[in-house]
Length: 95
Image (cartoon, rainbow, N blue to C red; front, top):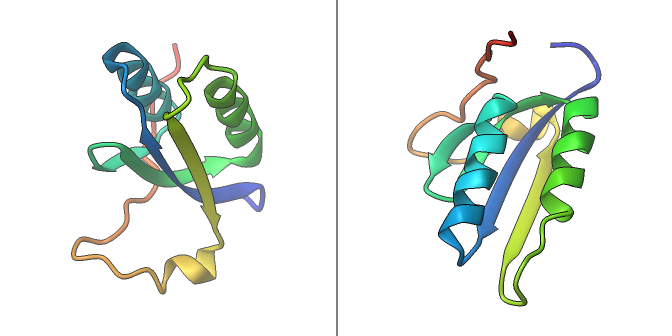
């Protein structure tokens, strides 16, 4: 990955099933991997991250809904504790 790549963790707590599904589809499309039901992680370009962030934060959310995006530097990623290793970026097909 190039220097404009970020490693991110995206977590969300959304009550509406349809919105949850749209969020998951968006994150999967951009190559992030589900590490828990409402938590995704992976490498993403800075440009894609800006696009994803805009799309997520432009959604009409309820008062109790929350989306959190946590960028992690590659050195810090090595210090994350997890039973399973954190995923790398999954390549997705563009047609």
